[in-house]
Image (cartoon, rainbow, N blue to C red; front, side, top):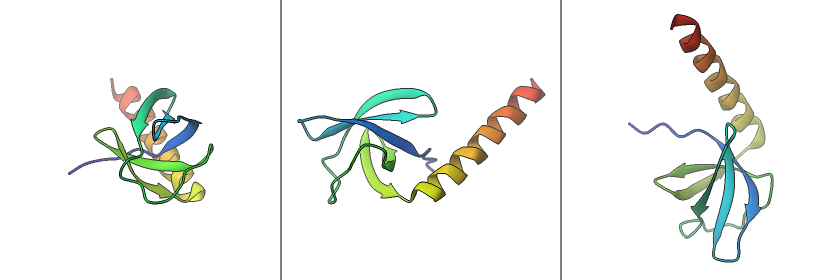
Length: 78
């Protein structure tokens, strides 16, 4: 099973790639598998360095809130 954390597009590059922010970590990923254009601020799901699809902002923010809650609870247990 693969778990994908929503990432926000923060920069668009000329080589069909974008820079995304995933919970504070920025990285450049490929858009070669995307069929629709992306804009800065869009939320996407990534798999092995490729943007797989764009997701709704509300759904992305709800998922990120759940991930943050999980991280907090794991930190409390340590």
